[in-house]
Image (cartoon, rainbow over all chains, first blue to last red; front, side, top):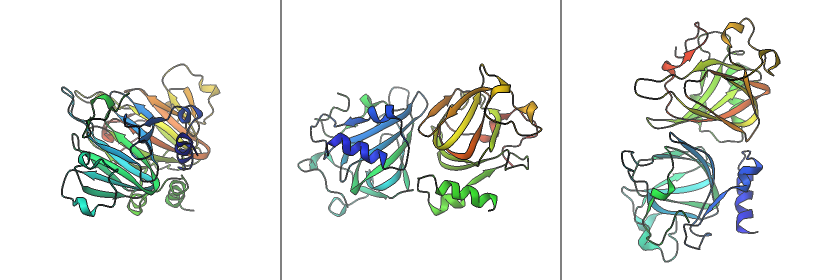
Length: 171
Length: 171
C-alpha cells in the first residue's frame, strides 16, 4: 500500500473518528530528508491557537521523529508538550541519564550523529509523558506503529531546532 | 447499574485506553445540586498545567453540564476551550442568536431560569467547536450519551461562574 494510504488506514484504525476533511489534510512530514519511511511523522492538527494546541499523530512501525527542541521565542517560553499513547507503543527519548547501547529503538541508519539523547520512556496505550520546554527529544514507534495524542502550548514549527542540520521542518 | 459504574463503562466503551488509576480517579461532578443524573459531568483530567489542559468527558444520555462562563482572572484571560465530540452526540449552547423554543435539548426540569443562552451547535463524532473566553455556555448529550475531548488553556474550576446561584463547582 502507498505510504499515505497506510497512514490514513492507521488513523482510521485508531478507534477515533476523523472527518473527511481531516483525513484529506493529514500532514505527512518528511523533514526535507526524503526518507519518510524511516524519519517522518504524520499529523492531524485539531486546534492550534495562541493559547494551546492539540494534535493526533501517527508513526508507522519503527518510524522516527528526529531529535529536536522547542526553544524560547522572544518573550515566550519554549513549547511544552504532553504525549499520550493511544495505540501501539512509542519510545520517547529526552535529555537525562540513558545508555545509547541499551535503548529499545534503532537509530535511523547513517544518522547516529544526530541522535544524542537517550533517556528512554516507553509509552503504552493510556500512558503519557510531559516534555519540558527547550528539551531535546526524539521518538520512535514500536513494531506495530503508534497513535499518539499531543496536548501542548501553541505550535510554531518554523522555530523548532533539529539536531540534524539537513532538516527543514517546514518546506 | 450504579451511576459511577455506568460512567466508567462509558469511558471504557469510548475506543480509548485509560489506566486503572485514571478510571479510579474519575471526577463525578454534581455541582452540589444533588441531581447528578440530570445535571452532572464526568471527567478524566489528562493534564492541567500553567500553559494548557486536556480532559476526556462523559455525559450520560441527556445529562447536562449547567450554564457557566470562565471569566478573566487578574491578568489572565478567561479559559478558552475546544470541545471535540468523540462518540455519541452533544448539543452545545453558547451566546448568540437562538430560539429557546426550538432547541433540540430539554432544559432540566425546574431550572429554566438558569439556562439563558440558546445558540445551538450540534456536535457529532469528529466535529469540534471552540468556545471563546468568558462566554456563557452549557451542553447536553443526546439519547446515547457522549464522549467529548476538551483541549483548553489552563483549568481553574473555582473561578467558574455558574448562572444557577445554587451551584458549587468545587465541593
